[in-house]
Image 1 (tube, rainbow, N blue to C red):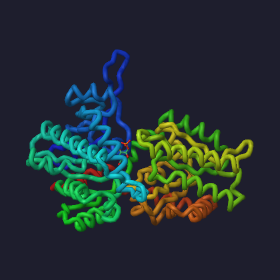
Image 2: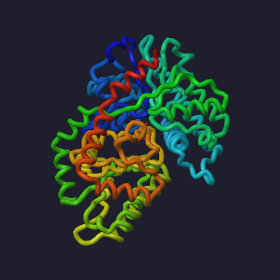
Image 3: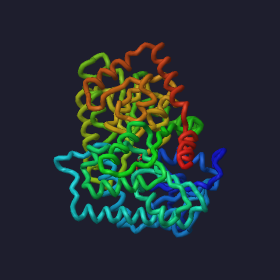
Image 4: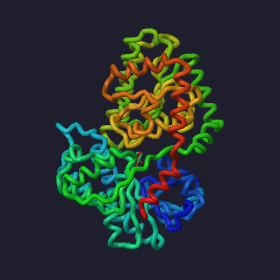
Length: 460
Ligand code: G6P
């Protein structure tokens, strides 16, 4: 699939390259799936014979799953119709409410997690989901294939395949941070060991930064699990794909709407899933502090925030959404005047509108409390047309590559973030241009092709 690689490739991930909806006659029709993984990998696998195995998520996906391997939109995909209760328990309770929380350090440990009977039942469902993927891979993978397993939903796949298909080489890649021993101790020892042995049962494990790879090896050491080979392969956006989105009429129309809202004011932008680890509330509180401490910005800057709802099956996310909306209301009530609304919150999941916002920022705020990589921090500089400044959390994986040209912020430091916003909004033209150019150069150094090549190299 890439020059020099002659072994067939199979990808396994929870979210797949195709998502289906039912047409007027009740037939499932495919469209391209959502998310960064899909947009990065899809152009690379399109037109190749790579097989992509993923979970069926909605009802239309489940209908499509009965058709076996589907060829559409230039890709070959197989969706798995996993028992809906098992899927929900594995995705909500284990994937999203436990593993995501552990790796991002999101647990308020005085209360959570609670490893009770319900949780253990969900863990069994997680094991069965990994079994189902292993069986599907064993059935469908060509002889001697390389299997690229993506993310925490499928941490137990490797060892299951060793028995079923010893000819395959399975590589696991984590798009999240890795917890490290201290955070991982939120889980009981038997679970930790099963998780670490699951990952270690792959030929190699990849991470976006050396920090997450180190944390994984350290966690293995602490629990006496023999760590496999690890590798570091930062993912970057595909410049051609972004340019095509930016050039689309819908994006230009969205840019026109944004310009109407902001007028000739400066624009602070953020683009995120509505996600706890993205630190959205603190971002608004830092903006509030900016307006409080630097009155010269009142009336002169708009914070355009695109945050699209996600994982709404979890109470934590519903509560967080309310907190986000209440914070925006408070800040707008405190500072807003007729003709100027300080924060414009867009909750719609409109990809091209968020691309438009990235074209137009003076300052891009990327302040996660912890993030495996954060592709927005890289997409922004490629798309931006104003030589905007990137404010980047030290805790984002992207910090490793971009720290020399971004303004680095500590994500919990509201005063520090407010000062960084002030400095960015008042930075001289020449320095903005220099930094924006440097950011573009750093980001352009690696795209999805290099990232994929690193995974294939790790299989050798
Ligand atoms: C992160 C994870 C992905 C996941 C995506 C969206 O980027 O690393 O594996 O697909 O979030 O989350 P969702 O739960 O909607 O798939």
